[in-house]
Length: 113
Length: 113
Image (cartoon, rainbow over all chains, first blue to last red):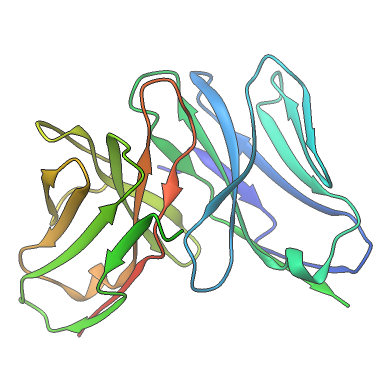
């Protein structure tokens, strides 16, 4: 049962453009929402994360927008660069000690020069 | 991340064979996780461990077993490999109980013929 739905599956953006990846979740018990970035041949690495008590978090060119009532959150990459080309995963975690992550299906981003 | 290593990096085996994937970490973290990555499905949790004596099943533990030999080592075994276990396998670590970030190893690509 997929509890975190991610779209689009793939995305092509021109250099300097804005990349937007969306995720929707079902379980209101989730209380931690990270985004992971994965380059080919590497493991995922934490990019940015948010908790439901704020609606937006920004780190450099990367911003998470969070809509608790709609149960949706999104990643915005401003001024996208070819080096941002990677697969991006959203995830959600329950508010218990296990911190088990439930991942979305991933978005393959290609930023053209 | 060199702090989390996985061996082997690639493995081809035959149906019915027993295989062990190993994960070692020098981060000193107490929590360790095993995930499986399939194209279009994201990462799914197989097992996780809080310490040597605390091992828990994840979403897809059937057909897998684990061993936490020491705080720094967490092994995943396939007792009798089958073709639909062909996937990328990732180990991750986290310093609990009050931190969120999971640190992933480089992955093991397993092919079961």
